[in-house]
Amino acid sequence: MTLGMPWILSNDSIQVLENTEQLCLIRMEEMQMHLQKDQLSRIIISGFKSIKKCDITFGNINVFIGSNGAGKSNFISSFSMLQNILAKNLQVSVAKKGVNSLLYNGRKVTEKIGFEVFFGNNSYGFELVPTDDNRLIFQKEYFGYHGNWENESIVAQGNSESMWENGVQNQIDSYVVPILKKQMWRVYHFHDTGNSARVKQEHNVSNNQALLFDAANLAAFLYRLKKNHTANYEEIIRTVQLIAPYFSDFVLEPQEENQELIILKWKQKGCEDVFNASQLSDGTLRFICLAVLLLQPHELQPATIIIDEPELGLHPYAITVFAEMAKQIAEEKQLIISTQSVELLNEFAAEDVIVVDRGREGSEFKRLDARELGIWLEEDYSLGDLWKKNILGGRLSR
Image 1 (tube, helix red, strand yellow):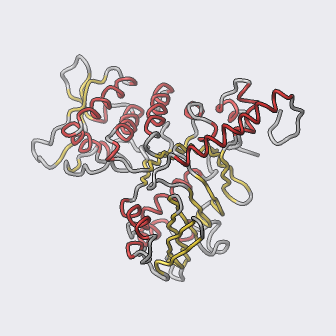
Image 2: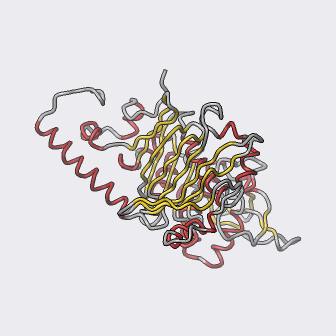
């Protein structure tokens, strides 16, 4: 049986599909109801990298799957670009990447980049256009309201950096400005665990307000948790020991020669020696970063946590433990995860998953529909099985 092709259904099968459809609709409604006011409910992107156009609605858990080159990483990078814009760092980030690489199929094909991020009925959006001197400037920057009526209020036009802090001088300001001020979404990449990785280097002990995107301040942040959030710190230790039973504890002390600096060290059970981060396997170090990210106090976390390929280098059991942490935290926070792991996909529900394919019109995004998968799932196929069989999409095509 192939999805998208007609087939004869029995009455029992029809009932399964009807029940599945009702559950799917209920699940999506619940996903939206449980979102907090500072979490992302929807995003519209146009003309950005491989994304000609996408319109995605978010729940508390959003798992993106797809083949290499489909556009998952480009989608994740859109949030980094958004952060740069809110931090008034647009021109520097554009200069590093080049205008042509940011526009869908280059500036000969695409005239502008459009973004709009929604927080319930309210939104923040902008349109960027290229200049003759290879910069991007704001054709317009605006706040939106999408309730009983539609309203777009202009923040600024022709500006080279964002002016969102000025607001629009109406009631939308009180909803949108506080969210943007807190920048309540953050992208995390824990890929670099080489000898020169920042997570293994000395860093300032006072750099501990939030876990950095690459965990470059991991030792300082753990030092803060150990001193001020003991229960969370101990839960991190217990969780790390699930996948590294030999692990005893971190050794978190400022350097003797300079009390302003700290470096990540650890101890092994039954051994008095102290080891540095380079003596952890890459997978263990990445898992530690993930555990700290998800088990830190909720008040220190952003409302939306975006993680790119968390499965990299992890043992299958570590992937399962990560998924359990993710599902637990999703009761209060919002997660956006990009993955190529069958094991990780199997840990989530169909409605949590968004498939990314690369078509003639660029990256295409589709949230899985349990109605279409009802018969397969009733036959005890897992989502990973269906992905490997290319039933879901998101696989390499000839």
